[in-house]
Image (cartoon, rainbow, N blue to C red; front, side, top):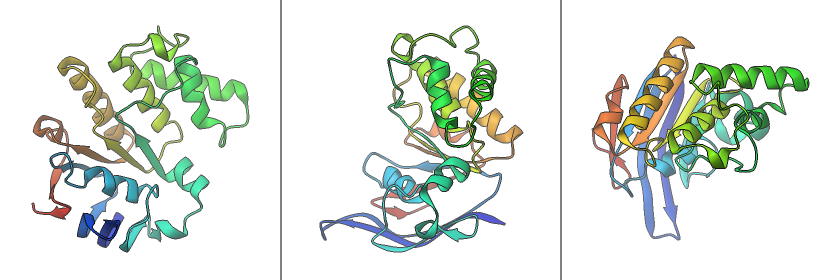
Length: 217
């Protein structure tokens, strides 16, 4: 069964710049997919449209059988879609555990349970000794692992990762990718990673290459 279906997606800015041009894709539940392409190929725009952050100029996006345009944004981003940003998007003055807890506020009313769930996730990615460290004091690799825990705190069906290793060194990148791939596989989650790096694509079951907003491979 297709978890994600894109039909003839185009995105035009200012009536001139065509970021995406008639993209159609189908991704099944439990699949891991690399979205490959150089900077400006349309990868980030496509992820933003799948996540509902942007509206396509034409075409339809369906996730779990429902058009994204008809989804309730809060429920959609809490239970169906998780997003891992390149820039981490953490609150630097909060601890690692508090950053993860923020994602659980809408779905978990008990403060103790939010705390315990967040601690469990952080320990699973090797940050058990950094639970109460402020995000500003963490390394790049540690910050991205906190961001990953936040992105999967509500166990989304689909995780979108936009150049997740773009700000990391080689060792940190390898560690993060191993954590992400192992977690999604063990939880039967679906993963789409936007990247320009063929090494990152190796963790995925298949690759889709974009050039100038079109699928070419």
